[in-house]
Length: 243
Image (cartoon, rainbow, N blue to C red; front, side):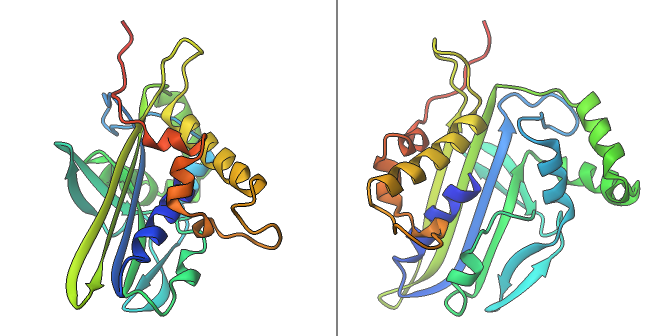
């Protein structure tokens, strides 16, 4: 999803004469949160803790800088569900470089259910487990269940000037787990595999440069979504409970 959201953000940004703000929000969440963290393990614990502990790239007032993880808390609702979002590392790819000098504000935040950030700050900062991540990882692995019933949320907001008028464009999508007869696949498995396979498929078809470094945002969103693998990001059905 971090790779896909960069494609989306760049696509929306291209439609503006003057860019103001690009806000990228992604969450890999349990479909049925039941614990105090309102979270289940759906991917690497090491990756999760890394994004909560490392400095985060951003652009503020047109300047590239690093911001603190777990800061910048905000709240929003989508389809009647309340969410929070906060700074996490690793989601911007090369967008800061690509949009340098063109955008006033650019940031990436992880989406969680309300209350998660406060509890993670308690663990990482108040209890100082950011200095003992081995213990924190052990606690999470032993105490927080995994799940295949998840949802990946992608939410991008871009604002700026179009023909002299201040405008905003939003892209919002939820991708749910698949419980088809071929075997269950979690939403994060679907989105991760779809992103990689679509990019390789487009490269193989000659739709991407055939040499040199290729940035994620060089992939055109319409081509990605039309691809046989990228179409996974088009699904909108709801996750099913186990009967």
